[in-house]
Length: 139
Image 1: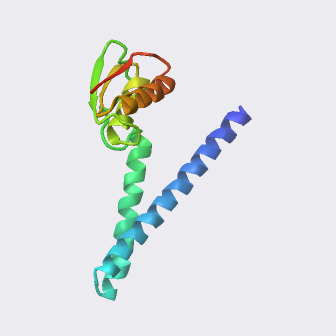
Image 2: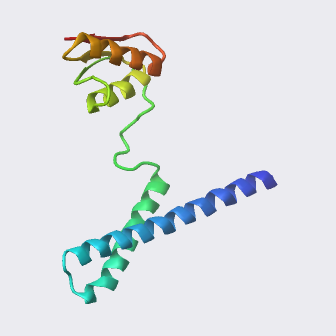
């Protein structure tokens, strides 16, 4: 019981620290933007307060609701029986990152690439990351 309450206290302290850091970062960011834009000095304090409050409220919403942008985004979905065709699937690109997420969620992934060598390299990396061999590529 004392271990559980200690853990709960640590979690709360961590959340408070993150909320404070978020508020400071938001206030500083908005103040810096106003300063760079040449806003008068009278705008400095309100910009810090506005930035801090908005960042603090955003942090609180994320902490309470448990997601950042869209509650319908279920990154834990099982896509085992789905097939995804991903364009631009060579390593280092946005397509490869998307393919990696889909493959790790269990989807069969077909990459489109420009060369066989890059396709084989990307497919091998995805196979290692996903833990299954339902990865292929087309030119």
